[in-house]
Figure (tube, rainbow, N blue to C red):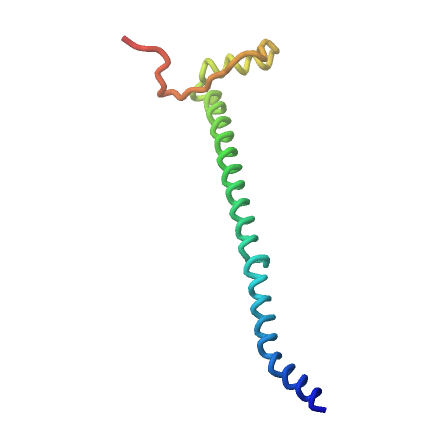
Length: 112
């Protein structure tokens, strides 16, 4: 009987630390692996970096298209853009042609 009582006494004494360790292990696992843990945070940061890069790429493409469309407006017709579109529409555009976009304020030729 004394062996049983000794085992039962030790089991009761170990119950509180075991419970505390299991709760601490649960929270420790969630800190690193949970939905809001360190690993999930690193994944969200990587997704945010990728989305910002995609956003910058989309804005750059949008600005390029806006520049091209601005050259074909009725109130201001850019001769180079008109020539480019006319060649493309009638099939005279060479695929090897290089088109360099520039702003109206850019000075292409040195003025003396």
